[in-house]
Image (cartoon, rainbow, N blue to C red):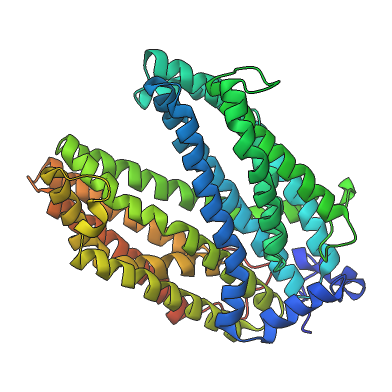
Length: 487
């Protein structure tokens, strides 16, 4: 096993190197086997094995979200509208905690594990828990202070605004639990353990599904709480998940343990997580802003255009569970190999994962390009809606493969601690897809086709930037735990 060290006494790695002799091996054979597989096993089978539990969990969570909307729908249109106003803000928090800061947690732990520094990886778990509490409190406070203003800006009025406040204030009271589940699950994924967080989240689903309608409608001993009951059920879901994950990480059953020694919380370790995580979180905000601005541009063409675009672009979101699962697996494998000094294998993992994702998403894209109505007519038969959705598919869907490739290289970059180029690619996508798209539509008289050409162009340029950066620059010998993501 290669231990990566620094000859510079002022380096953050210097303190780590001193402690390294007592951190050589994983705590048990299961962790040791996972590490050997990620370091020396066949790339694609290992990637798919790590990704499968996450795919299952994300699909189940998506279905749970649909079920919750179904339960709330019995309360009326205003209740559904209120929950819908909160949804994008809650999703932003989930994306920041899972793919943003969570990516930084998984990356730091994977690189420490790969370098054989298990005690350092465990110290990073405690630092992740501290960050979860801090970010959770920030999101709770922000929603309570600014929530009403945001919901009004999103169109909330009268009963819908009241429902949004009832649901939002309730669900964001549990923001700390959401962050704890996200960051501790990311820590386990960073160590190559995808089964444990999957099992915990699935167990939480067993709690949420019956509890949500019971609290909404007042079944049995439960009071009728309406839309606030749906929020309480979500809070309980994440509370149960947080307690179980903490208990699991404190048990002897895991190869990665959570120590409760606050002396292990240091600015160096927090910085190690945030150097990757904060920039990744910024990339998440960029991605969401791009979608919002494109939706606004489509809105200039009327309700039918928005409906057609919304139905078509929904297929984009259905790809996210697969891409996130593959990306999380690639992040772990890349991080472990970077930590072990196996730079070339880490780069090979990134390309294998990216090309596999590109192949799967491109097949889907080609299908809906040739047969757009096969998807669109599941939701509408309105000719104007179908026309708008068909334009989107025929212009954008042929390049789904590049989108998949770019997203997997982004996750792989997180694992290597190098996310500057992926985030820069996302910034260019924002400028081209949303910025140029708005100019073409609002000032140059362009139509939907021209707007969607800008969207496709943004995806193409972004993917080319990320792929070219890895192909031409690689991750090199400086891709160690002390590397800056800005390198």
